[in-house]
Length: 73
Image (cartoon, rainbow, N blue to C red; front, top):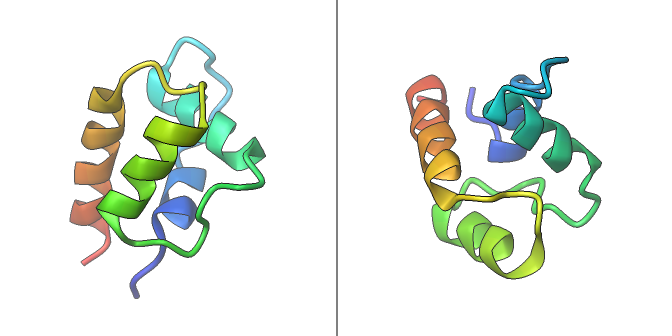
């Protein structure tokens, strides 16, 4: 079953603020404007680059995106 990136990243939330993936997932879960239904890399990167300040590096997003693709076949 295919799912949106948003639904995938919510599974990565945790309680370790020192883990960058868990911190990113927690920030996304609180972002009411995040494109929740999107499965499109460009739509999500545009949103993250232009609209948020909770992601310090797009490299982290790219790593998470790769795992999303692996788990969303």
